[in-house]
Amino acid sequence: MFGVWAPGEDVAKLAYYGLYALQHRGQESAGIATSDGHRLLVYKDMGLVSQVFDERSLASLTGHLAVGHCRYSTTGGSTWENAQPTLGGHDEGTVALAHNGNLINSAELRALVEERTGEDGHRGELRYGNTTDTALVTALLADHPGRTLESAALELLPLLRGAFCFVFMSEDTLYAARDPQGIRPLVLGRLDRGWVVASETAALDIVGASFVREIQPGELLAIDASGLRSRRFAPQDPKGCVFEYVYLARPDTTINERAVHEARVEMGRILAREHPVEADLVIPTPESGTPAAIGYAQESGIPYGQGLVKNAYVGRTFIQPSQTIRQLGIRLKLNPLKEVIKGKRLVVVDDSIVRGNTQRALVRMLREAGAVEVHVRISSPPVRWPCFYGIDFATRAELIATGIGVEEVCRSIGADTLGYISEEGMIEATCQPADRLCTACFTGVYPVELPPEDQLGKDLLELEFAGGTPLDRPIDVVAQALARP
Image (cartoon, rainbow, N blue to C red; front, side, top):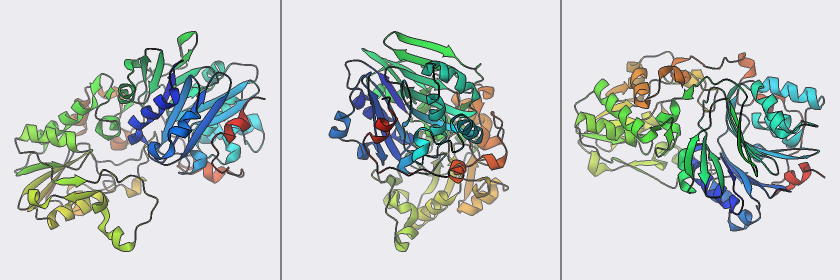
């Protein structure tokens, strides 16, 4: 998620490169909205940032402010209708909104939309088949007759529950907001002639913006020709997602003054102290396990090596594999260097085990390549609870660690030994106070109280949606349809 206000700059290209730096946060669809102060346009489609945009599409997105998004779905399916930024219109203008996170009171928000707009509740992109929590927020922001968008946001934001970082815009103003718990990261940067907001500091680096500060939990920022102003819509109660340090964020990002790469290396060092083993070689599961593997090797004195080669071109594929290819499984992404691992006792370091399918296939593949022992080390504790704050984890029944111990997981994946870092060790590596982190996926303690189970789920709004006809992926038909007369 990326936003920029910069008169005189090519904001569409800045947003493009910002999204390129954030591609790891979502690979399903991508979109950019821009405004020149009078007209707001959007271009979005399914696929990676590099697949969605080209010189021609970017040239059509003119203006001095932009909002961009690359999607990883947690509410609503992976469809064009659910791509972001989402759009909403009212008598005085248009709003385009991008969202990182996941709301847990979508059912309440849907009822509020219906209450304000009529029985069918089809306002904004909802009328075209959008089934996301983002579209609900956009529709409610757009419904503010006689008030400014800023005042509407200050009224709406306290009603939202769950994880949300928003970057949104009107024709002339860029906004950014972060939930009171600050579960997902959001940062502010400075350009020579403007401002940037982004999900991670790495995106600031890519576009040449200097880091100013993190946007605070419970804060709303507005940026326009008058400058930057800050408003607080809720008291802050920080509970940053610890999994950002473990896996989600880029290693070259900094969160709360802690370099993510250093946190992951330290997790590896702590893991080596907590779960030592006699072995010949430490190898990572690339790329996510690499920093922790380096730390494990440093602390244990066991040599570090690259025993697996990752195919750099494997992304999201729409081509269904044949049965023969499907059986090859993990080999599409990883292949062993047989001459490196043959006859070796291996320590294989990865960031997490969710369902266990990847580790099971990996252990089997390493044994077939000649490894004599495979010791798996994981730089996070067992994942035993689903996430409702922006990570599409499996249901609790699908999580391999649910209801069984480490030894049983070890036998299930076929390893000689298995060691997880302790919760205390993981938290120590982040250099954050334990009471300022969300560890719900490991502990089951959710910092924002969850609603009843029947009001949760990725397809909640799809089940409720009862109308609307999807459009045929125009460049700006939705924007033109919603824009002011």
